[in-house]
Image 1 (cartoon, rainbow, N blue to C red):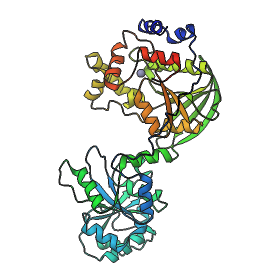
Image 2: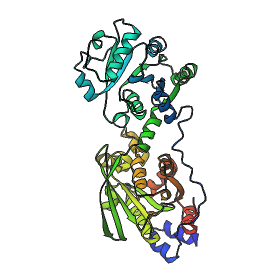
Image 3: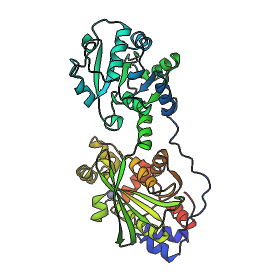
Image 4: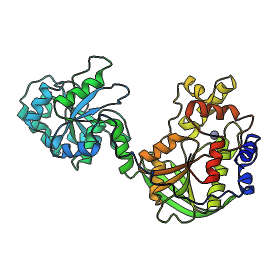
Amino acid sequence: MINEVAASVAKGGDICSILNAVNIDLRPADFGSNSKCAFSSPTEGFASILDAIDDIRQGKMVVISGDEKRESKGYIMVAASQITPEAIDFLMNRGSGIIYVTVEGGGLEKLQSPFMNVEHSTTACISANDLATTILALASRESNVEYYSSGSISLLRYREGGILERAGHREPPGDLAVLAGLEPIAVLCEVPCDDGSTERLTKLHKFANEENLKIISITDLIRHRRINDKLIELTASVKIPTTWGTFTAYCYQSITDGIEHIAMVKGKIGEGHDVLVRVHSECLTGDIFGSARCDCGNQLALAMQLIERTGRGVLVYNRGHEGRGIGLGNKLRAYVLQDAGLDTVDANIELGLPVDSREYHISAQILRHLGVQSVRLLTNNPVKCVELRSYGLAVIDRIPVVATITKENERYLETKGAKMNHVFGDSCMSNIINGSGC
Ligand SMILES: [Zn+2]
């Protein structure tokens, strides 16, 4: 039977009519306890964000590493409200000696300080005591500017929204201070191991180890906030009769960028276990116009049919994911290059764009808001399983969505298999048929 289905798929047959014809059972099954979530684990070699927050609350310093893959700079931070003359001495002697204080934009303007538009290194020489007093005054939002004009500290603007708004070195200290329950004002000093070598990250870890300071990664901080901050707002919900059956549509707005997403829900989510879920990336050409260049429209239809037939499930429609995140215009430009011989991956690279820049934290938040706990994910893309797990959802099964293979999309699907680890084929069909994971 499996071979029959696979053969029909290869000939371009309609999957759902085939599944109906062979009476495939799509009822939820027991897939065991393979639901371990990786979201609480920090990147290897780094401290957890929760441990770092504890230290900051206690007035300890923490080392922040930039993008660990790019060997970027490292900084020592301490919450401004916890600064001491001893900490100043440490930053002067073991850090680079140039001390910055990050202050949110509104707070900076209220200070009316001579430093308002000045971001330069220290020149004057005042005592650690006086510097600590100055920084404590800043942390308590005093407007006395006597010490600010000393030239010994520089103020940096911390953008409201922090690291989720701008992934620079100015935002993590303020974010960490807020997470520790303190004012978003922090002291920052570069770790002096920037000799341009490719071993910068190793040196940064060595420094933190020698000084007995925790070191965290900015990537982990972003992930922590994407899991724990409320980043969506439910704006409407209503029943919608569709081609495939009646679903309840939930509209969610992303708080950071205002983009509206939709979740089509079938049946009762209840305790939220073993829910059939499709996290679908917007594809205007495929979903609306039935473009044969990709399999998106067919996957969308198949997922809706499967969820309808199961009687319980969710399809999250992710807006802003067009062209794996490069946008509609760029996707069409990539098609021009594909017509000239490049595949879907190389075309993006040729345009100087990422192969896949999609993020799944908004999908995870939407699913969690709907009460979904564990997921049987309809996807050919194993990365989606890893991503959703990293944002706190238990993905207990992956069910491939093998849509119609045609002459037009055959090469596109081959590339996704060869270069993006997508999984199609007989084994996928057997998993749908048997109700077990790939
Ligand atoms: Zn598409």
